[in-house]
Length: 598
Image (cartoon, rainbow, N blue to C red):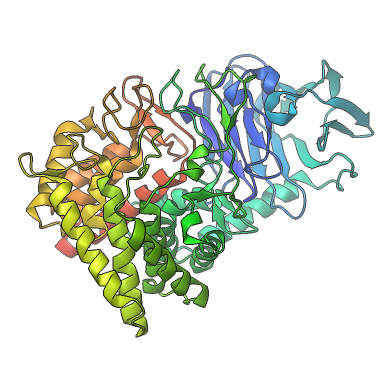
């Protein structure tokens, strides 16, 4: 059985990533890319679906772990009755093939250790053939193969690789697992100690480039490292998470594949990276966005594959029971084919922010963005599927209309700044029409709040974005009323729900889910904009306490069971955390406050 989600740490090489449990087990790994099939899928099934565990024999007295400062090199320390042993995990910097390096280091006394490696290809379905040769053991099935090299003898039993050994204080025992194509020879071996040292040095150098000077510097650094680890280096695409089907509700069906790139993340990612001095990474992400959306405006998708792929066909893996019985397990994402009008606003906002942040403009950005908005001019009045990718009927979602306004507003501003009028009159008229309609049809005057969709009494946490995108100023009474309504009706046990997922919800799914953490960070930002800084900081501190011991956020928080749920680690949560940290720091500076110093 898999561990609690917060008991996992992340290692990666900016092509793929693995989840390492506090018990020394790697329970999730896709090779060679984030979106490839998994060869370790214990996270969503059982040990028979693949894992790699290195751990002491017997139960530890205590287990602690940490990342080496400013890196993605993970250390887990097991205290046993007769000694202490340290497990060092990382993915070596990729030159050609993916490699996981694991080093067992004796700290005190003598500790018996056990290694159990059972690769299972095609998301845990296919058991491989095992071949031992000299100092290496390989396992392969179909096109996929892995090779294990170890400092101790490895035996094979029931298509699993095993070893038992003891480590004394000062001793090191190294393991390297390499992925490769089964019809090719395994690549030459590497030195495990050198690989760890080089990986650590690279991450320290990368972290050292940060220019962030605000409050919560260490916490922001950890989130930026996580975002870098979730970036696919060849293209610059940022995956939403390295996992699929970790549930939004334990035992439920809200299980989605997040190993893709959402346009919605673009503007936040650009802000976070540029504000911390990572211009190269921000530019690569901007360029990925521009390449991915090329084509007919009608074909714009909310998400794409990590290289810009459009076909993300969704299917189910019936042989996997799901995380804690949360079935089905899905691969692909049918929401990629939904109509979500807000994505046009997010695209225009990302391109606009890139220009405002000082990124070198590219000719490939403005003209296509203008054509997308002209298409939107003809279609913005249509109902859509909304920001939450609902599987119910299309609605006139208020957030979608607000973001359609953002699309027109940002293109108008870019045209004004470039001195090119283009279709300025049409865009100005569209911007005014959307604003008037939203304020007329999307606002409940009796309750003094905007609503989820026209004619609805439901609220939606996405309404918190109204002042943040500039649709209305924070000083507008309708903004304050909406914030107060959301605090009154959507805040459960101290955290903001996306909406109330009951039988009357618009999502077309069974009731039940946790608190979507990004929504609570949106509330932090709104409270800061309203001048309620102490209240904003109190909520921010509660959210910060939900990170696991390694500083990682999941997508949601289950208030009933007091644990993280949803895909992990989740880029959108880390992005909204960074945005809130920056907003609070700026608000405190503007007020001359030192209350936020950390």
